[in-house]
Length: 486
Image (cartoon, rainbow, N blue to C red; front, top):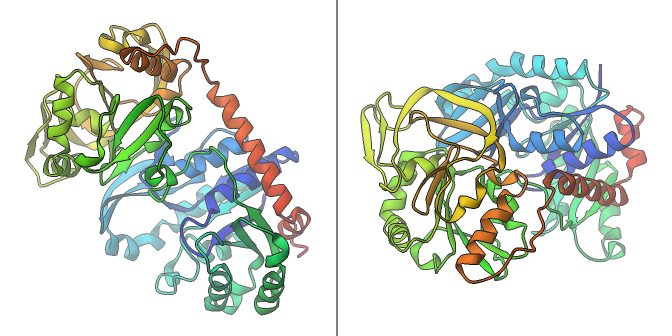
């Protein structure tokens, strides 16, 4: 069976996912076969594997860092929030249905056999399993039936690296407070502390590090510097959703829906120097964009109502009348159609019907079973300003409850476009073709824009991540922890 190590955090968004990806890459570089694992993930940013299973994006990124194909066993439980108090529950890649938070909390120990079966099958195939926790192990109201932090660590006998985020301040209190709230047997599993996102002179921090080690009786295994890397984020805390981008030649507005999902679809656009990609949640921030993107959402009906009530729908319709291009993906695509119906109560009350924006010839009907598949082909019959896409190969994946009959990979009507495909812009030359067309509309020549090899670029970023973490982490200690010698 594989050796294992677990990355837990003092709270959400301390960098557990990225550090786990870094360890996957480092172990892979050192010649080991390695797989990531997270028993339960809560995210609206998901992915569909080659065999049609749905899993969290973080474990996809970690698998890529490890040089292997994503597998739903790496994330046996995925929770996709549908409201503030409920989520769709996905087990081993397939949706079981929606559950209220209290119901899932009561039942989640029932899923432990599925979790352990997934883990053990991976452990039989790989040398090392890098496990990621969720939230904090010191959530003392939740730990008695926990399956994601110390409960899982005990079940699979994993040593723990505990990560704190120095950027918002209070990292010593984060780490010491977390360790102090753990039970003695849990505390014994913490073999190393990691201070993440450090900016400044390590010598100034050194006295505090020594005091922290004395207080916790645990060595500091790493002081990881702040990293400027381009690796897909997973959750809504991502800086991509809130950061202010410098002005670019092209201005692209993404409508920030309340239940936005798969916003990493737009990374290939955001990464271009020519582009300012902004997330917009009110009319006054919309400005005069060159392209409006309607993203995916876990709650299409509720988010379409929000779009209508916020005034953004009316604003988008005015832009469409001026021939400003609009592109909807998945839930955003459905919103652009004529009508959305929910006869079985998948998202709303049974029998709900809602008028769409009427910009595309599309009627959506929700069904209880989810479409989950990868798809590839060649663009055909694309009209309007993005007609240059014709003949280009595409590949992506579909995740949706809605049905609308047979439609092309990219449906268009004038300069309004819609697609079911997530990952649309990852294909060779697709982002460049779209940007060139947008620039031409403004009288700007971007004919010399070179296509980006997304896979080669991603590999470069993983290597840079691994190099940076190696420099900040005591890898000899990490290997001793992994080998149970520390």
